[in-house]
Image 1 (tube, helix red, strand yellow):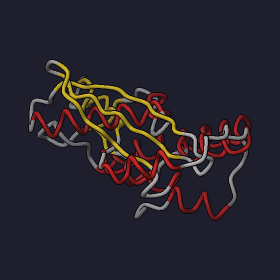
Image 2: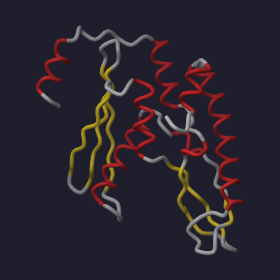
Image 3: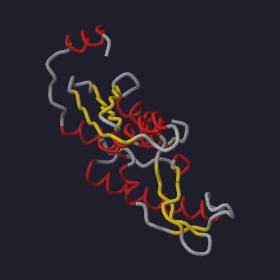
Image 4: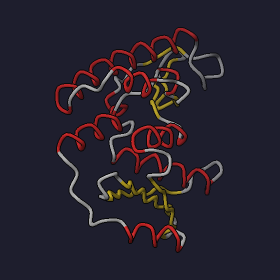
Length: 196
């Protein structure tokens, strides 16, 4: 953090607490499901007859996009530190009320591009602590047909995954609406926009 940024933050008024309504709206926006084409999949375990159980995940850019959508592109920051062999991402949100909310999580370096992978994974894991993409842990475990190389799902498999995700998104949106309040149509459209 630059000295200028530190000075500006220190000049802010004493933070007022975030209202319950604003807290629910922020949680609702951060936790909203993503568009089907924003979800990525990797093989979790291989089944019989060239099938595999696929695990859903987000690219770090989707976490970045959701933070921009929910609090604004200049109202959050990510600080990465190294602790032993782990990368720790510390994401801080600066709310209009002056309140600051920070979450952190870590990850080891990945097998491919260890540094970039560790930083991205720790950032995505921290995003989950704010609710970003956390619903993906509720994806049903389904085995889908794979292409001959066994690495990628067939078109039928992709259709099965997208259908499962779409069903989950509808259920999760209903849950969020019930517990955190519905969001207006324009906000819902923005959050589901595959282009951000």
